[in-house]
Amino acid sequence: MFKIISGVVMRWLGGGTLAALLAMGGGWLWHDWQTGRLEERLAEARGESTDLRSSLSHWQAEAERRKQALDQVRQDVRAAEAAMLELEARLEQKDAAYEELWQRIQTAPESDDGPVAPVLRKTLEGLP
Image 1 (cartoon, helix red, strand yellow):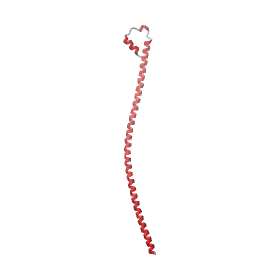
Image 2 (cartoon, rainbow, N blue to C red; image 1 turned 90 degrees about the vertical axis):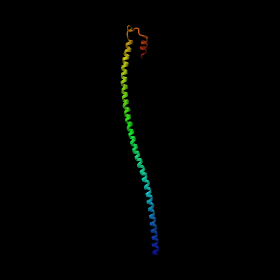
Image 3 (cartoon, one colour; image 1 turned 60 degrees about the vertical axis):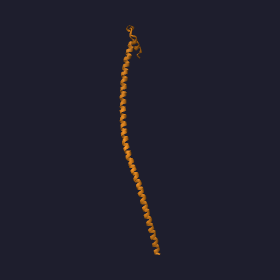
Image 4 (tube, rainbow, N blue to C red; image 1 turned 135 degrees about the vertical axis):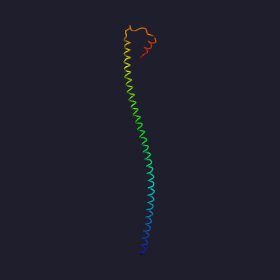
């Protein structure tokens, strides 16, 4: 009976050991396959990361160029506004001088009036 029990135990242990070895081998193969897949995905992610970093540098440089261009446009606008204000001030001075001349002409006595060449008269009357 001891032989039967020991034979059953040996079969059970031998079969269990073989099953355990097969399971461990399968687990190792599955782990190796998963590790390989993960390493490939990691390499792809690193490549994409490098691409994104270089792209980021490009876009940061582009943004800096556009910011400088915008700053230049703002400076040009300020200069144009200052020039426009200066021209408006000069125009107001000219308008004031023109208005003064026009008032002087309108208030001149009749004795100061005299014959004028028709071309000159039409030109003077055509002035605003």
